[in-house]
Amino acid sequence: MPTPYQLDDLLALPAAASRGRATWVYGALRFFLDIPAAARTERLLQFTAEIDAHPRGGEVRGILREFWSHHSYIRVISEAGLPDEVFLLRELLARALRPLVPVDEVQGDLYILLDSLNLREEDAQWVASLPDPFVDWWADIFRPSPFSILASCKLLALRATNVALARDFLTVGSDEDVTKSGFFTLPGLVEHVVQNPEDFSQWETRRELCEAQLRETTQLLEERGASASMIFRVRLLRSLVWRIQQVLNLQRRDSDSRKFAVAIVHGFASQRRIGSVVSASTRRLARSVVEKTGRVGKHYIAKNESQWKMMGLGAIMAGVITCFTALFKYSISALIHAPFLVAIGHSLNYTVSFLLMQAGGFLLASKMPAATAATLVDAMEDPEKDHMASLQAISQTQTLVTIGNLFGAVLASIVVDRIWNAVAGHPFLTSEEAAHGVHMLFPFSSLTIPFAIVTGVFLWLSSLATGWTANYLALTRMESAIANSLRIRRQLGAAPANSIAHWVKHHAAGSAGYIVLGFLLGSVPILFTLFGIPLEVRHVTLASASLGYALDALWLGGELRRSDLILSFAGIGLVGLLNIFTSFALSFLLAVRARDIGQVKARRFLTEVGHKLVSHPVSFLLPGFDSSRDA
Image 1 (tube, rainbow, N blue to C red):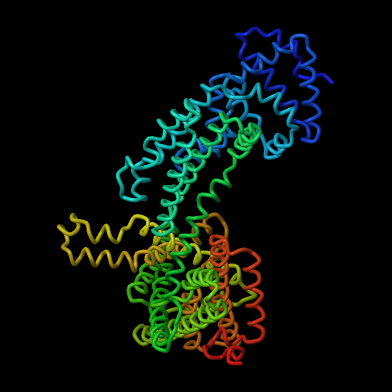
Image 2 (image 1 turned 90 degrees about the vertical axis):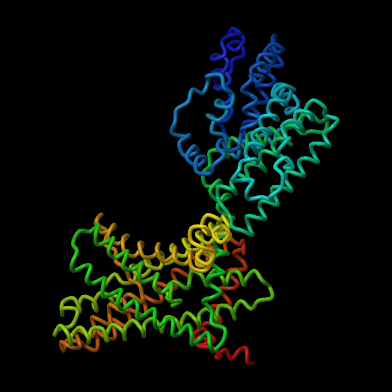
C-alpha cells in the first residue's frame, strides 16, 4: 500500500522547506499511530530497514536528526505533560479550551506537532515495549543536544523558582529567610551541573532539600487547612523537580533514554485530561474539609446524662424557632407573588432562623448527619476506637435531637395557632391550605419521597460549605489575625477584637453552612419551578411545624380525619429518614474516599452494621440497650 513516508519525497525537499518536512514527518507519524500497537513495531522495523537500505540513508538520518534538533525541541523536553499555568482554575480552563482551538500542526513547532497527534497511554506502553537495538538506532536521532539539555533544565529551574518563591506560597511555609529556600539558587546550580556533570551529587543534595521543603509545606497544609490551588502548585513543583532529574540523567552513561521517551509520550497523553488534575488537586482539600467537618460532628454526640438533657432541650428550642419559620414562610407566600422576591424572602427567613439556632446553641437534627458521618470515618481510621459504638452513639443522639425537633415544632405550632385563633377568630391557615399541607406529606400520593432526598442533598452541600469555611479560616489563620490585628484593636478595642476572634473560631463556619442551607432551601426550588421543573422543600423540622398549623386548622374546623393524621405523620417520619440518610450517606462516601479508607474496609463495616441492625435495632435508638456488649 502507498505510504506517506516515501524517502525520495523527503530527500527532494529543499533544506529551507521546514513546512514541507514537518508535513512529511506528521504524515509518517500518523501512518504509524493509526494502526493497532501490535502491528506498529513491524511497520516501524520495515521503515528503519528502508532507511538503512536506501543509497542516501545517511542523508535521511541527517535530515531527521536536524528536524528533531529544532529549537522548539526544548519546549518538548521542558513542557510535555506539565501544566501550562501556575494557577489551578486557569489550567483547567486552558485544558478545556485546547481541543476547541484550531492549530497549525506543521508551523515548525515540534511541541504543537506532537500535541496534535492526540497521543494515548497505549502509545507510551508501545514505546516501552520496543526492542533494545531498535531503540538504540532511533536514540541517535531523538537524543537532545547539550544545548537543549542546558536550556531545558534552566527553563524548568526558573519556572520552579518562580512558583516556589511566590509570596502566597512562602507564607504557607516556615518563616525563614527566603534565601534559605532550596529553590532560591536552583537555576544557577542546575546550569553548573549541566556544564559539569561530575558534580551531579550537588544536584542530588539540592533535590533532597527541595523535596524536604515541599514535604514541610504539605504537612503545614494538612495541619492548618488545604487549598486546591496551593496543592496544585506543590504537585507542579514536584513535577518540575522530577523533570529536571530526568533531563540531567540524559547526560549520564547509565541513563535509560527509553524511560525519558516514555515519560514524554505519557506526558502528551495525559496533559489534555481535566479529571486527573481536579482529582489530584482536590483530594487533599476534600480530606481537610472532611477533617474540619468531623471536628464539628464530635460536638453532636451525647456522652453523658447532662449532655443528653442539654441536647434534648436545644433540639426542642430549635423546633420552637422553626414554628415561627413556617409562620413567616406562609406569610411571605401569601403577601409576595414575584418569584424572585419570594425566593429572597424564603431564603432570608430560613437563614435568620438557622442563625438564631446557631447563636443559641440549639440543634437541628437534619444538620447533624453530614458532620457525624465524617466523625465516624475519623473513628474508622483509629484501630483503638470501637466503630460500632461510635455509630450507635451517633444514631442515639440523632434520634434524641430528631424527636426533640419534632416535639418542639409541632407543639409550638399548635400553641401559636390557638393564640392566632383566639385573637383573629380563625386558624392561621384556611381549610384548603391546611388540607394541602397535610396531603402533600402523604408518602405515596405525592412527591414527598424525591423532594426529601433532594433536601438531603441540600443538607449535605451546606455541610461542605461549613467544612470549606473552617478549612479557609484555618489556612488563613483568621482567628489569630483578628485577635492580634493592631488596626482592629485600635478601632474597636482589645476586648471586642478577642470576641470577634472567638466568634470566628467557634461560629463562623457553622454560620456559613446555615446561610448556604437557607438559600438552597429558599431559592433553588423556585428557580427550578421557573424552568418548569416541580421541586419543593421537604425538610423534616420545617415540615413538622407546617403540619402542626395544618392539623390544628383541620381540628378546629372539624375536618381532621384519622387517616390524614396517620398518613401525614408517616410522611414526616419518612421525610426525616430520607433527609438524614441521604445527607449521612453522601458525607460518609466522601469521607471514605477522601481519607483513603478503602472499599473493602468500608464494605466490611457496613456489613457489620447491617447484622447489628437486624440483631439489636434498639441499640441504635436508645442508650444502654446493647445486650451483645453486656454478654
